[in-house]
Length: 136
Ligand SMILES: [Zn+2]
Image (cartoon, rainbow, N blue to C red; front, top):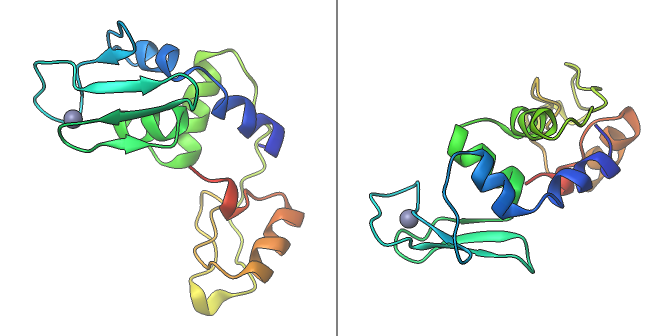
């Protein structure tokens, strides 16, 4: 998946994604799925496309993060789930390969490099992997 595809997933309205996850959103709020909630403690920022629970502190960067957390998926699976739900087709270029910086952990199967050096980031992007900075 490329940067544009990722950005499309990031731009999916957070409240719509929450509803697809089975949450009931009204007045930009819903029952928090991450703790025993009875008072709709979770609120959504439509402007920033983020969520936050004022009781348990759960908060995140956006739709991908919400799906990861709610469905207990990793980054790539959460992207796939979101894409499926919205009839989007992702370019799958994830493959197993070692990053140059093997000493730092190299690459995981999902195409995420565990080393945080800029050099390896650059080479990964060239190879078609997801750059670290683009992750949720
Ligand atoms: Zn909560």
